[in-house]
Structure formats: structure tokens, C-alpha cells
Image 1 (cartoon, rainbow, N blue to C red):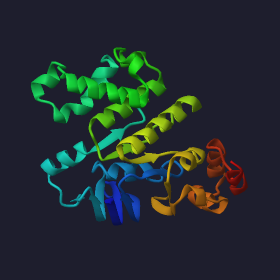
Image 2: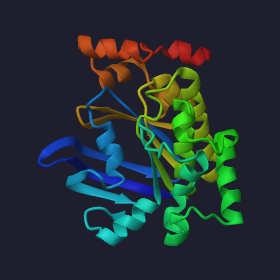
Image 3: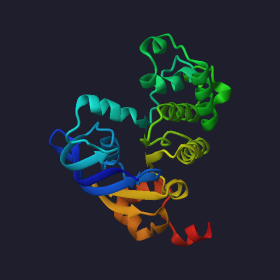
Length: 268
């Protein structure tokens, strides 16, 4: 089932075009990564789905809503159907893991109950389920400022799941994490994708992770989509097209585990 459709879409800030003339559709249940060098519009495209970047021209439909014509009230409801995971976690540091995850339920709770942090037995059970999904239940009562980066990102994922979203947008969710924590976070996202059928769209730098975890890759350069397909079909020529071949981009490719070898991929 189609959830997102973009046609000749141009996104930007003010009059500045950042994403230029892109076309794509995304179906329910996909785990998709957007890759490309820094500054090419990956985050702008990702957050365009949440209507936090301006549509300068073209069409963008998300969960059946036309973002060119959506009203404020409809937009608020739409955003409640989309979970967002930020690179900087965006947790309330002084609150516990449990309370941070519960904040994902705010749109489903009466205001007074939310203010006094009152949870029903069913809600406690639901929160505990999400903690188990992300593997953070042992830290349920710990303040979030006492957690590691990887643990904080897992709390952020659980909070997003608690929204009951149909789509999760993850903006560089592993860029500040060590390799072990990064893999744990991606395992958690894959678990959410498989267990709940949530569509996951993640900005990733590392092609090896995109190939392992995602079933589709969109490659961007200079605000345009230059590749849209299976991660298994990424070859060196395509990667060069995505990342260009200037000395600066060559260094960026080396930084993010390049060059890519199709022969190595078949041997894995």
C-alpha cells in the first residue's frame, strides 16, 4: 500500500531550493535508507515528509494527505501518525526512561493524566513492551542523563513506537554512536519494522549498514535522486555518481567505509 508519493517535488527554505525535482513512492512496511554526502538535501527530504520543510513546487502526498493543501489541524493529526528520531535524541534528561517513552503517548492521553504522569495498568504494560522491544527495560527508572548514547537512542526509538506511528523518520540515528551501539540501534529499528509493520526511512552515511538492514536505498547528490533501488545493486560506478569524485568526496567515501566492492558483497 502506497504511503508517500512525490512528483516533481522541490523543497527548500525561503526561496532557496535544496531538494530539486524528485519523484518517488514509498510503500507501507519498507525499510529505506537515504544516502549521500553531507549537504545534498537528505535531511530536507526526510523532514519534508513531516511537513517541516517548505514545498516550493511539485506535489507531496503523505498517508493520503496532500501537503500542499493541508490545514493546521489536519497537519497536527498527520504528524501524530509519523514518529521522528533525531540525531540528538531530544529526550528530557531529568526524566526517567519510562516517562520519556510515555511522552510518545501524549496525543492519546487526557491532559491532566499526562501532566501528573499517571499511567493505567494497560499503559504500563504497553510501555514495558516497548522497552523490551528496544532492550532498555533494565533501565526503566534511570534518568536519561545517566544513559549512554546508544541507550538514549533506543529510548528515542521506543518513544517513537509509543506514538503508534505508521511511519518512522530517523535522521542520522547512528552518526554519533560507536559501531556496537550503532548496530544495536539498527537492530532495534529493524525489529520495529518487522514486529509492527512500521515504515522506516533513515538517513545513513554507511553503505555497509544500508545494505545489511534496508530493502531499498535512495542515493542523493546536489539535491537530486541519482539512485533508487535495491542496496544489492549498488556498484562502484553508482557510488561514484552519488558521492562524486572530487578529492573532498573521495576522502568522505574513505571515511564511510568505501570503496565498495561487488565481489566482496557476493562473498559475504
